[in-house]
Length: 518
Image 1 (cartoon, rainbow, N blue to C red):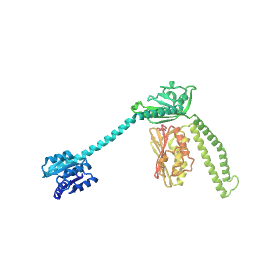
Image 2: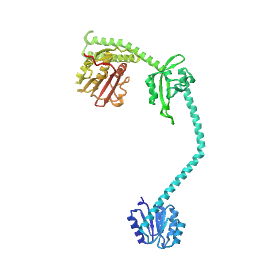
Image 3: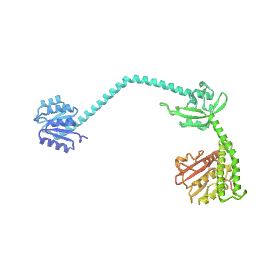
Image 4: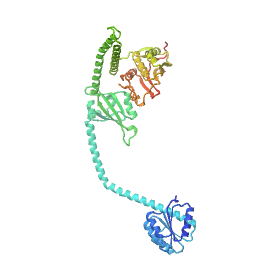
C-alpha cells in the first residue's frame, strides 16, 4: 500500500544515505529521493510534495530543525521524522513543539522500529490528506447549502408561481379542448370530465360523476375490461357514446392511458380518456366509399363492352386482321381485363367494408374444394416447373362449413402470390390441418421471402409487394383476403425469411366436420 509513496531522506553523510536507501529498498519502497544538502531538498519539495521526510539533525549548512521548519511551510501535511545521534531531549522536544515534527529517532536506531515509524508516518500523511479533502468538501457543501438556504424561499415562491401559471394553462387547454377528456377510476367510473365531454353526453359534470363507462360507452366489452386489467394504453376505434338528450349514439375514438402517480398502489391508478367525435370522418368515409362503389360499378359495363368488342376483332368475327394488329388488339384486351379486375376488387372491398356482402355458407368437401383450387393454378405452376402439392392432417375426409366462392378467392390469391414469388423449379405446399374442429390452411413456398419490416403491412389496403420488390397487382388481394377471413371470424397471417420462403396461414374456427366421409 505504501511502497510507491514518495520519501525524501536528507543527511550530509553519504554512507547514512546509502544505508537508509538499502534498508527501505529491501522493504519494497521504490520512490526515494536522497539529498546531502538541505537546500537542494527544499528546492525539490517546492515542485514535488513528498509523503514523508526523513532528516538528520546535525548538518553543516542547516541543521535538521531549521530544514524541517522550512519544509513544514511548503508541505504542512507531510509527516517528518528527525534523526539525531545525541540524546538531547530538549532539542527533540523543541523540534516537536516548534516545528511540529511527527517523531524523532536516536542514532543508532533499531531497523524494525525505524520501519514501523516510517509506515506509521506515511499512514499519518495519508489520513491528514484525506481529512483535509473531507474538510474542503464539507466547506464547499456548507457554502453551497448556505447559498441554497438564502435562495430557497425565492425558489419556492417562483416554483409556486410557475405551478399556478401551469395550472391555469392546463385548465384552459382541458376546458377549451375540442376533444372530450375524462378521468376514470379503477372501478371504471367517471371522476371528472371537461365541457366537451359534457356536450357529447348531454350531461353536466355533477351527473357524470360516478357514472359507469358501460352506461355511456358502447364498444367491445373485452376492450373495456382490458383498460383496467392491463393498466396500459388502449385505443377504442369502433366505439360510440350515448347522448342522453337525443338518445343518439355518436361514433367516437377513445384513447385511454393510466395516470402514474407516486404513492399510489397498482389498484389505485386512475385513467385519462381522450374522446374524439368522428361523426364527420365516418360520413366522409361513407361518401367516399359510395363514390368509389358508384364509379367502379358504372365502369364495369363499358369495360366489358370494350373487352367483348376486342375479342370480336381477335377471333375474326369482324373480318381478318394482320399479325401486328392482333398483337396490339390483344395488348388492349389484356389492359382492359386488368382494369376490370381492379374495378371488381374495389367493389368487393367496398361490399365487405360497408357490410353489404353477406356470406353464403354451405357445407362441402374440403378435399374436393382444395383440388379444384389447385387445378385452376396448375397451368401456371407447370409453366414455371413448380411442384404444387396438397397435404392433409386429420382432415382429408372432412367437410367444411364456409362460403365456398369467397374462400376460393382467398386460396387462389394466396397460391397466385406464391407462384409469382417462387423461382422456376421451386416448390409450393398447400396444407390443411384439423385443429380441434378448426381449419388451419397454410400455403408454403421456398421463394424470395419478405423482409420483417414489410410483414406488418401485407394485409393493408393497396400494399404492393415489399420494399425490395414491387408487385404489378392492385394491392387489394391480401386486403380482400383478410376481409373475407375475418368475415368468417377467422385470422390470416404470414411468416417469412428473406431468400428462404414464406408461409401464409388462414384460421377458420369451428368449421370442420371431421366425422363426415366423402
